[in-house]
Image 1 (tube, rainbow, N blue to C red):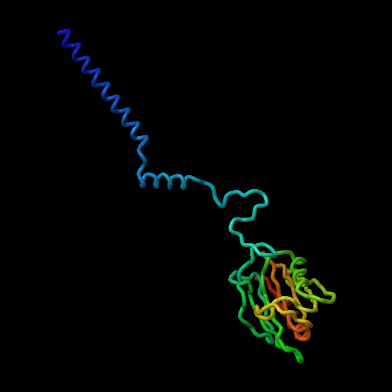
Image 2: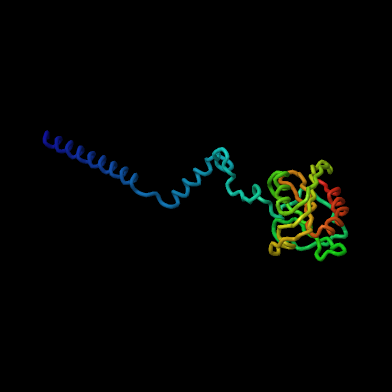
Length: 227
């Protein structure tokens, strides 16, 4: 009888030990077994949903915005498809022309004055940079230039800076043609400080033709209206 009881206990102990060993093996196997793709995807979605951060990550001080475009004269340059924040009335004596670049909001031609061999071109653009920096850029497009004249005015709350200069124009020719010096040319321009980046209205061409466009140019500037 005693031997029988001892045998039964030994069998029970051995069985319990076997069960404990099998359980430990199962736990270790579960840890080392890679999760299936659906499980990984599920956990990934749970992590994303639980992340309460919004917007782009913080950048070091002075770091430019991620994805922002650059130009040689300032920050990102808006494209012509950007909705204008001002409107204007086009002079009836000017004819509309195709925009040579995506930076143009509008392009017009001024009929040549008597004695001139070319029309003048009017461009309306938006770009970055300060008013003074952009005016200096315009002036540097002229060689042998005379003294420039500047004036400021307020048009329906818009600050406008006017500039006029003449000399040998070194910028590109009409409609993005190759750059050729043009003696006896003039520039009549306006920098319009509007919400966001400023607007630029610029007339370039033979001096007599640019002078003939002054009244129409002033009328366009006086028609500027915030939209």
